[in-house]
Length: 144
Image (cartoon, rainbow, N blue to C red; front, side, top):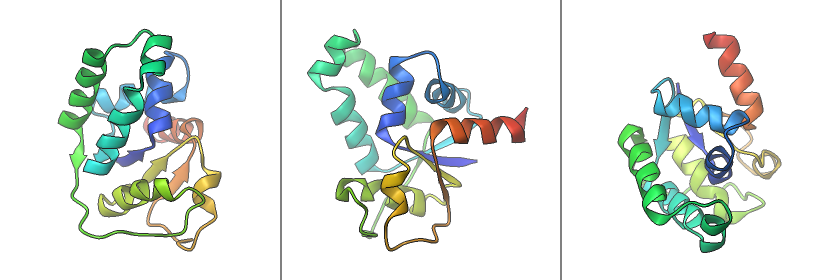
């Protein structure tokens, strides 16, 4: 199963060992899920996770973040996007996630901001947009 994961899910999974986001990260690391990545997604992860305020607040350092990103990249299904999709999302900066999910044939796009993806011109995605909790519950019912 291939999934595209929003930055907010990666961040939540790193900041707390509780909750669905952390469990999803573990499933990726255990290679029970295939994470789809594009250059834009990796750059977004890198930018957000290395923000000084976040690293200090949560006692992470640049080396730890780079090791986590390196592992995710190593395990990921890597894609190159040659075209841009612009489905008029509420947040224009989220379009790169749609592109990644679309190009990788992801089954799911996992985000804590589902509502940001529901109001746009592309109503019939070839993937389902779910919250981390919804996705993890679905994964458990299919795999446990």
